[in-house]
Length: 205
Image (cartoon, rainbow, N blue to C red):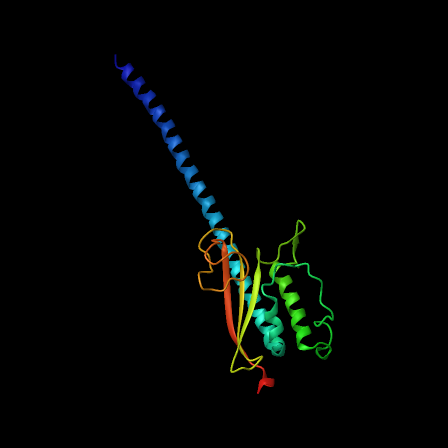
């Protein structure tokens, strides 16, 4: 008469252990999904940070090129926006290898812009036949405001925009500079950095 309750208790204990295993499996699955999602978010944020750092580096590189060649500043600003034609032919003469005296300021500017455009889209790195070393859908714009009517002394602005991985908020709002692409406030994937500096040409004195 006392054996039946014992058998029933054992049966209940076996079923309860199975439920515990199922609950542990569900909790573990949710935890693993959270880890995977966190890793994906981390990779995305890391990529965005790398792209922004690269954009700042490219903007600084162009600023230094203009500072070295201030007499050609007007030629730098006549090609906005850059980045749409990474396969454009190399300008002649090659102002990077020849002596500085062999190229005039406008030729140096043309060659600088050609090199910069290739750096924007990353032609130096190829993956599956496509450019992979630059910014996605990169565009670069250069503007210049002369000071006191001097042709090559004034405020230089270099703007770079590209496409981010995720939709957030358009980096270009109404009234701001659009460096290629759609109108301001219409592209939530658009990222942009803008660097300002002052360029001085001693020949303007």
